[in-house]
Length: 164
Length: 124
Ligand SMILES: [Mg+2]
Image (cartoon, rainbow over all chains, first blue to last red; front, side):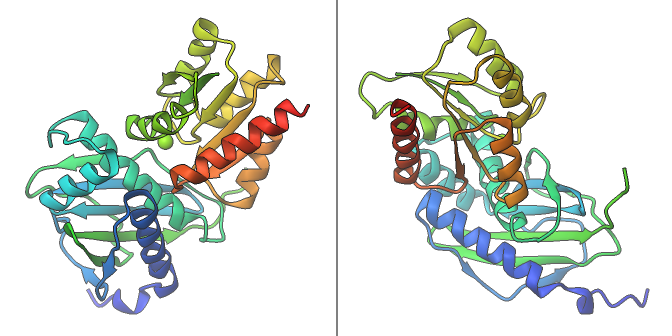
């Protein structure tokens, strides 16, 4: 179809996620995240193997996926919790989820609208797929840390407030 | 000092626990959502301080705090949350929180807010 999603990328919105990602990683984990040029994603597969997903509600709809290379997730969680959790444990998923919760929440505070966030979901495993909004660009922000790579994948749009 | 820690993330509760257990003579009780938080108050209360997250399944922190304040106007409550918009903070203050910490935070920043809150409460 001829819809030019690239032209619809909201660079100000993407900048909020870059800022919140850097802020959460440096404040809570003591790690610097370097960001590469954001790009559009066309398929449904997140970039890496460990994904935290946070949905948006209220005047924003869609979701943000924070997708970590397995080793990156393992090292970040270890540094965040001071524990070496098994990748398949609830504790590991909890830590990944809370990192994602903070990144999404910290970006949301500057949206300037009344939006809410869902409780984070965490998916672990190769080749998982996540459905998303088709009419909105999915913008992938590649991030690099001393522990390896992860990406922040933003697929959200503003919706008009519903009269109650 | 007996402190109630209410957050759906165990990771977050552990971080809080490390901070509060650094205060001499402190005992911490944990709860994973607002419902568990209210149960913990019945079972282990009264507390000298409560740290409460906002976004949790079953019952949010805001709902829990509103319930607590129906009968208990005094126990200091610090909300620790990603919810950082001004209207939300105002909502929380109206519900009866004494102090507010925005995630992400450093352990020092959390400790400072706890100190500040307890000093204010003890000063009457
Ligand atoms: Mg929470």
